[in-house]
Image 1 (tube, rainbow, N blue to C red):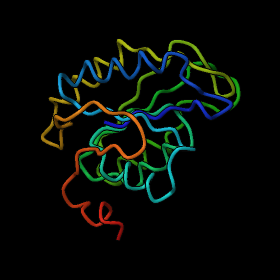
Image 2: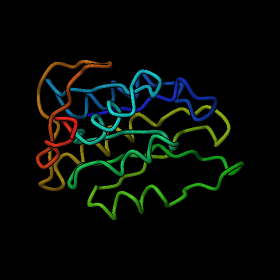
Image 3: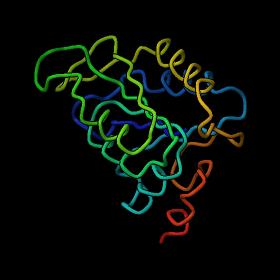
Image 4: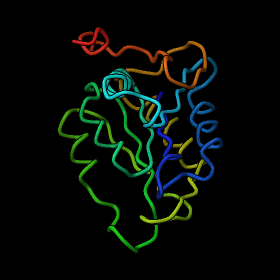
Length: 169
């Protein structure tokens, strides 16, 4: 699983990011690999490789969700939305439409507090419930066992038919 951090952004940072990662890891079960993605730590090629090989991507609403375009069909995307109605209207369906158009299962969890121009607090119990439900709801790829690593150079489970991405082609 890949969990996007916006710690390097001015808005929509998830203030309880550690608890969010723990909720995802707990919902997936022992041995699930969970990698935290911070955009500035990866090259474009590395970013594309991570998103192309992830079987589950959890991300607060933001530019990183555009990388769902390279996710493998059958992968799962969970967007963390914001409840305030200031700034950009939410939920904006463009990331949902993107994922659905390429065969990626889309889910949404609304943050407890936050907005387009502010930080957010993820609803970790909702995120955990959604991840547990999606894990068993359909026959797509599932997060596989392995070390629970987080950082550049970590390997995510490889999703079939994305071998070319992994090899850099």
